[in-house]
Length: 350
Image (tube, rainbow, N blue to C red):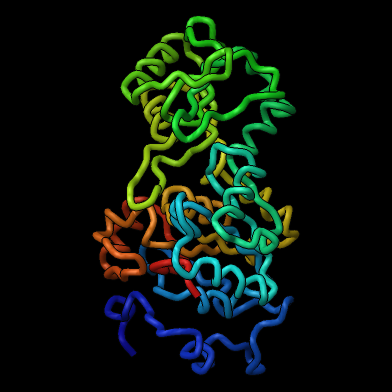
């Protein structure tokens, strides 16, 4: 047997038949795992000394479906903001047909109902999902209920960094007063990176440089910041778009106080586990961001599958959908981000 140092880092499989006929992932009785029987792969973990295996979605399926909850990111996994990825709709239908409990957990500034409508408009059967949890929904609920001490201490006057061309985020029903003068604000609320909200509700377009100037003024006043989308960038068609997390990271690096809502914070994973009624060892997160999806899964004690063709595609030198990447490049990237997936897949396909 080869030593651990010389053994292949990734396993490559042609399809589900190769896995099913190998018998590797069958229980000792030569049957697939039952709903209450731990799968052979469910306890596999990845660390710097044990890089993740390359798999296809059906390899993961054989170990988890029927008794596991699947937490799915949307951008970079299911779609690119404009169109569904090839094979993603079929993969969801196959998982649903095999009894998987699926929850969308997304660092989207928008509320859960908007996300569901978006997925439906792209052709996804939304009945496949048990629930949808977005960072925007979590932010809305915390600002509304204020039953958390940190949120209870916030004032009502905010500078609202929102979207312009992508559609401004409504704050209706939250009892907030949007101000454009930082001197009048009690906190900063970041939903987007294109505009400032106004008292009338109409977004005032701003460049990233202008928004950074707003942050500098916020630092002078020591204003706390709530970021409703912790992502740094997201996939839009074949391009990457700057997300609110980039602004929040800069604000925090300069000494500002930031409340991060969504992945990688455990709160969104805990909410998803509560909805599905399963324990951490029965869950798997599928995402394209090592810093958010995979790091959050690591911190929550659940398995994860990293999709290489999303936000890290350029870093990995990928130019085509479904293109494979060398094991050294993935290992280096995982170490760089300190995030270690259980599985690595080129795309979310069956």
